[in-house]
Length: 360
Ligand code: SAM
Ligand code: SF4
Ligand code: SF4
Image 1 (cartoon, rainbow, N blue to C red):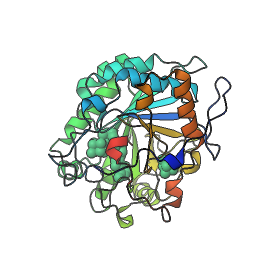
Image 2: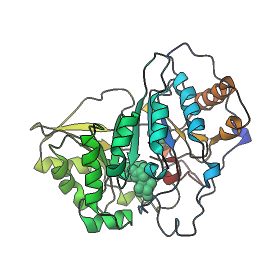
Image 3: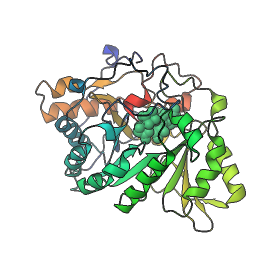
C-alpha cells in the first residue's frame, strides 16, 4: 500500500464563514461543494491492471481491518453534515462497494437524509457488477437512485486480462440487465480504454449498448495512484474514440445538463441513445470539479490525485458535536486549491492516493 501522508500540520484548513440555508461552501477557486463520493471498502474481487495490479495487491496485501472502517452510522452522520454544506449527490464506491456487508442498509440510511431544502440526495453507486444481479433489487428497494457499472470489454479473454479476475462478461451483463429491470436506470456503463489492451473493444461496446437505454461512457486511462505504471502513450483520447465511432454511427454533441457534469455527451443521430466521454487527461475539467471524497476509514480528500487527506474519524470517535464536524468539513473544502489534471505536467506527487482506496 502506498505511503500517503494523512495529516500535514502546515496545511491546517482555515475556518469557513457560516452558510445561508441551501448555500454551498466554496473552495479557493469559488467551486461549490456538490458531490460526496464515499468509499466503503478498500477490498475488491478484481485486480484490474490499471487500478489494483496483482503484483502490488497480492495475497499478502494488508487491507484495512474492519475496526478501522467507518460504521454505517458514522458514514451517515458525515453525509448529513455534507448535505448541510451543499452536497446534493452521493456516490458509493470502493474498492468494490458490493463487498461491504449489508450495503443496502447503508443505502437505506442515506436515502432518508434530506438537503436543507427538504430534498433527498441523488444516491448512486459504482460497481464492477459481479454481485449486482443478486443485490440490485435490495438496493433499489433501499432507495438507490441509479447505478454505474464498470465493464472494459465484451470479449471474455480481453475482459479477463483487464480485470485479472476469471469472471465472465455475461455475469456483468446480467447485473446490468437486472439493475435496469428493478428501476436503477438508465444504467451507466464505464469503460476505461487502455491502448494495446482493450481499444479494439470500443466499437463492439458501442454496437452492443446502442439502443439499450444504457449509457456507455468511455474513460481516458488516468495516472491515478502509484502502481499502474501509467504512460501517456497508453491513453486513447476522447477525440480518438469519437473518431472511431463516428465512422460507423453518426453522432452529434449534446449540451451539458448542469455545471460540473464530467462526461461530454454525444447522441447517435438515428435516435439510438447517447454515449459519454470522460476526458480527464486530454481535456481536464478541474474548473468545474465539485467533488469531495471520504475514504473507508474516514479521511476527506479533495482531489483524486491528492497525496494527503484530512482525518474525520478521530473527531467522530471523540464525541465531537455536529458543529465541530461541520466546521472541519467546511474548513477542508474552503481551503481547497486542487487542479491536478490541469497541471499534470508540472505537478509532482510522491505518493498519490490509490484509486482502489478512494474510489472513482
Ligand atoms: N470497483 C468499482 C468499479 O470498478 O466500478 C468501484 C471502484 S473503481 C475504483 C471506480 C471507477 O474507477 C471504475 O469505473 C474504474 O474503471 C475507474 N478506474 C480505476 N482506475 C482507473 C484509471 N487508472 N483510469 C481511469 N479510470 C479508472
Ligand atoms: Fe476493483 Fe474497481 Fe479497481 Fe477494478 S477498478 S480493481 S473493480 S476497484
Ligand atoms: Fe477534481 Fe482533482 Fe480530478 Fe481536477 S484532478 S477534476 S480537482 S479530482
